[in-house]
Image (cartoon, rainbow, N blue to C red; front, top):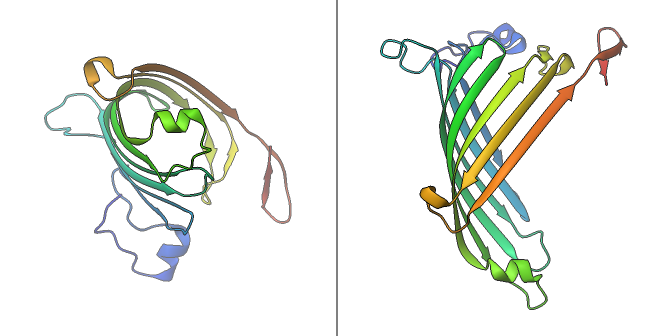
Length: 193
């Protein structure tokens, strides 16, 4: 991502040749709504301080906001910040350590709300550290469609304890995906399973 690489023609826009940099990623998502809003800003620098750090260290930061009134018995607001570092073991694999802090407010609770909701009424804080490993061999086309390959990741997160916050827990998560193109029709449109 390079903010100074603005498109100079419609061909640049059509071919995605603008804001191209040294592998940086900037994601801005805004999803305003009456019943649910979700906003997120994310930035990843794949080569953090290369003149000082002699190995490829990745830096990432995420900020997100979530607001929901879709539950019948309560309303929820959540603000989360994440920051972390990653080390690319190979072109397709990375190990990351991330710190996150999440402030959640549960309010407007109805009398018939579930006991779990009543127990966490008000402001709640989660402070956690995670370690993850990811292999990404997915094949992505120019339309950001995964048409082949596979990916796998695993993450362990520890909340509370030495990190503070209102809750102590351990979370272990694993994910995997695989996809292949079944056929092309019409023209070069991919049908993927």
